[in-house]
Length: 163
Image (cartoon, rainbow, N blue to C red):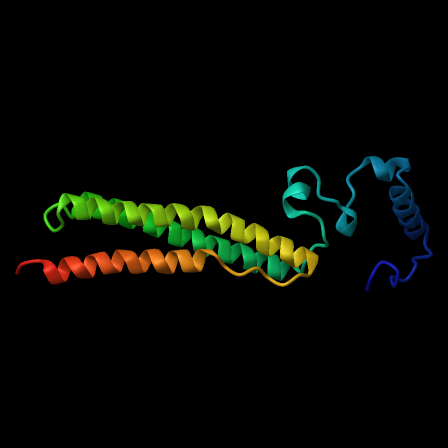
């Protein structure tokens, strides 16, 4: 039921609640001075600026967007850990140039994935609020191209390495 469809409570407590809603809507009375609850809350400050208006989407969609953001963050952390591991543990396996190249590529991919995931989350949240089509993911092609580059470097090394 929406607010317009709610049955009116004719008890004295119900009349007080209705009067409180009316005075909160007009900006007068004690109810307006206190915290406004439910759908009457408005975003303020940085949230209003970052989300750019619109209406709140279904919380399930917002939470799914957040889970996707966290998955990108996990991927970013795994890439950073991989870059550190390559630099720290492969000194006997790789030449210093290859080790540094692979490590830096993994660290850069982690940086781009972590930073890009925030902007992806924000753009999807804005699109849902405006009921617009979801934006194309820009992180996925960057991650795919970077991963392919790292894999190609390692394949060339393995093929060219003397046994």
